[in-house]
Structures are given as structure tokens and as C-alpha cells.
Image (cartoon, rainbow, N blue to C red; front, top):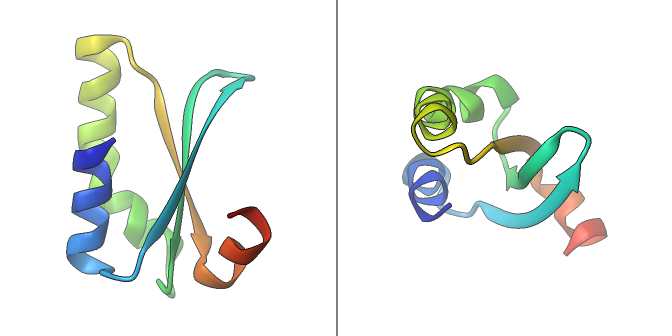
Length: 75
């Protein structure tokens, strides 16, 4: 998780995160709250690494990019 957060913070230094475990589908979900205008830009920062993580270790981490304003409702 730390590397994913570091990759996102390198571009969005004010990013905040919330990690939850979920079962549909099973895995870890990392909510990434940023001021990004394009949420796909956040995913582009980590998508290749997440695929390798899942294949190499079996850890399924899903990054959910959300607007920074939504953090107050979840944190």
C-alpha cells in the first residue's frame, strides 16, 4: 500500500487515503482522495503496478479515485 500511496502523492501531494477490506470482489480497497480533475489520471499512476501485485503476490488491491471533498464523509 505504501508504494501506491507514494506514487499518487508524488503527483498529488495533498492526497489522503482510506483502506478497507471488502468481499465483493474479495480484496483491499484503497480510496484515494485527490484534487485530480481526471480520476483516470490517478489510476494511470498505479494500474501497471497493481496488476503486477495481483499476479505476483495474489494481493488484490483496488484503487478508487475520489474527489478530495468526499474525504470528510469517509474519514
